[in-house]
Length: 298
Image (cartoon, rainbow, N blue to C red; front, side):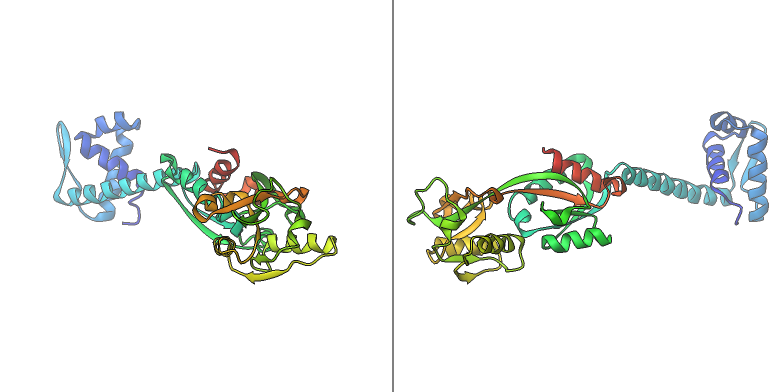
């Protein structure tokens, strides 16, 4: 049975469908004698006749019908495999793994990914999202254990290919009845006169604030630390402390939690997030489609 190759099976199916070796030859653009030779070899390998020959055509024997049924399934499975591989090749199927910072995932990233997955051509793509610090994302991309990262652009992404994802403005979150709530903007140094709520010390935003406070010869007076922005806004809404947060993250809390976002005037408070990777040319097609969607907008 080892000589039942795909070409012979395809020709055998064609002969059975046409009921004639000659007509199958015309259909498949191959000489009838070549088809006869292949089928004769199949019969020799099987040790049984697969076709009954008549003056005006052929039809499968009982054994031939068994071969026909299996051959049709094999050829159908092969067509499905080729179709699926083609879909992977043009990015319509695949598995994209994103490593993102908490700042990115708590703002607009999930909405952007949802809009990508809603597109009909992307229905076969699966996405995994894992939260990581910027330093961890850069390290994983550099060593090749991650393919795409979404993080704040800073000196650590040098050496990686990256594309602009979106801009982000930091602001001071205060209760609407706070003394600073009527301000249109504020400098970071002015905020240091108040007790702050802090996010994890290892986060990029927390490190940035510590660095800037040090440059000013000041310290940040933290009243409480929490694990994420949502908890931080709850602290601010309760009046326990103020906090430096991204404006886009705080906007949904404005009316709901009675919080005012006062933009920072410091140049470093305007941040750019990027999609980064070792090499765009070496990304899988589905990952390329994701990067293009995130960096080119809707």
